[in-house]
Length: 370
Image (cartoon, rainbow, N blue to C red; front, side):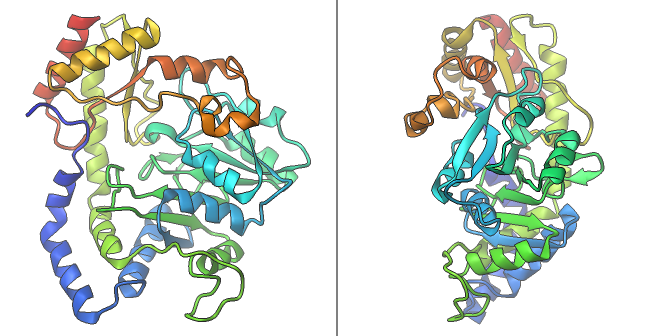
């Protein structure tokens, strides 16, 4: 059968019986959109993140888009973010009519280069999206001070960082707004699409609640032009149950990361991720770098696949080199760290069901190949 890359089905197995009871209750009441089940999850998640409000939406991409719209960002504005992120981060900026302004990442952490961000702030800058990549939070305390003085919002892309903490704050409680994806393979994953926005800004939360529901809180009350992006109760029920397990599941992921380090630390042909601290990294992904570049990395990827070990590449192209965003005008070589990482990174299996024997086997095959 081999070693799977992720195992969202194993997490679902742990909540299935309770979830089925919830679904039957939802069906008996006939409330399949919104309602008390969604509100209950929103309260639980807001409490978990340490914020006033959590607003469920259709998916993580919508979360970023609606956050930007709630801040009145549109044509003529600029939003700064990082070049090595999933394309959804930049898509959301694009669809507001604002211009995405990209910066490079740091080689040791793979996270946005905070120092580089300040060089691109100007009068048109309305927001900065920091991406907590692979489960590790961006340490951006100094950036917040600069942004606050200039009236620039900080949006956290927390799609991969549910459960991570930095400076005694949870992801989603670090900036003006936090945006989460509950895609099934995330640390906190739904059984389909889902997303959430967190904030302690009452004005922002009220506007987002209207934007997600055709411009109004109540049915047929359309105060502003809105959208249709709501977290449904069947997903909310699963998420509320999974939330109770999240910290324990993250502990398992951190243990898996420690085992990878134990078995691979003597392998000079790869570079292991730096562990920043006990709580900063929730290890949504465990990403190594393969010395020798794309050819060597791709060959290792295929070798492991032949051995029944499923790996992935997050992400094969930085955003500025995708056809979708060639219009931004960034030439190859503009963001050398992001481009170098894209040629070297390989995500190893990371899930709550992987065993030490599995990790020993994966490590043995990596060493045998390189």
